[in-house]
Length: 142
Image 1 (cartoon, rainbow, N blue to C red):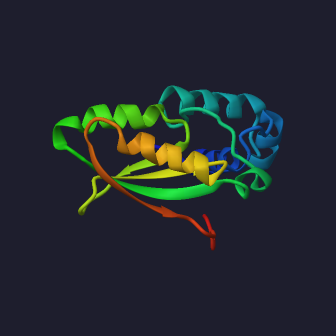
Image 2 (image 1 turned 90 degrees about the vertical axis):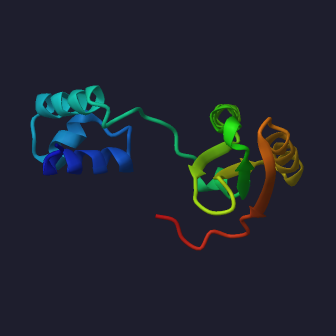
């Protein structure tokens, strides 16, 4: 179980994964060693999987993003998921209910690059068909 203090720690790290342990301790009104111990425990128990890079608006605003609905033949589901995970331009992949099996969130630097990516997805073994929708504008994101 995660305590309220752990939740606050996670929120601070989610907001800024590069925040120093000293700043975390000050913000949480805990000792540095307590914060380090909590972080180590959260990492060991798998609550914190890793730390990454979040792209800035200056970079993201120049990308072409799309949602790609993907219908997969049932026997190829696992293989297709593995192949899609290898495509670094796919930032998210969701299993969904309905006519399609998956929705991929993709990002490319140009529409030409996006077109090639869509071809690559459509040509995977097991992919029956795809439908894509280019994201024109983000109204809000949480």
